[in-house]
Length: 279
Image (cartoon, rainbow, N blue to C red; front, side):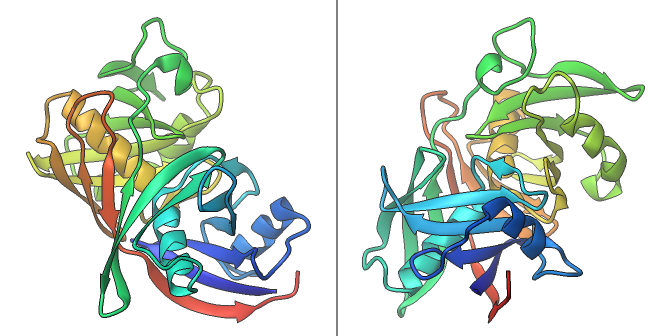
């Protein structure tokens, strides 16, 4: 089976073109292909298919074989892939994932995609819809104690659930390997959660690390980056245009602060290599 490995800011996935290939057992394929020792290696598996409600469909699996609703870095890579393959001949088109449609705008210079802008839709702040168990309608700057340490948590869904914690030191020094799984599997998150630990540098810059449910730490998370900026704006920490500095690179996020307005994400989509593997 042919595959392509791509990454967005180091958030790497194995991509299968389902216009040309058929994957019989998608969960098993995700587990095998994602394995960094016995497979191709990646944070998960992305299947590229013809869309029903959009031009294309992105089917996403985490490295442990669990389905995920959305990945901001992966959708940029899918956008570049379908353009480069000639499946679309315009710089604007749509991609759906688990029924949610996102709108793409490519930056193309001399026939080469140099950046991808994604309308990620409006953030979901209602606690029950994220979902997170809460006594209030929203979880904004709520105190939570995990393993004896107090955090202030803001919860946002960008099609998948996120818990954002702002900390007072560089995320590179934070004990992510310890606290990440404790947040992911906390009983207040019925569908588990992606946990972001971020430091506000100034009104237009944030540093962030992420622990993704079903995968562990990744070098970047597009939806998590969007959720972090939404949380920062809701708490009054930043302006409306923010560059988020991740371990794997930078993403630019815009949000007006109006809950009904879309979050706009702009960032790279890069190829690593292509090959064939027996499944």
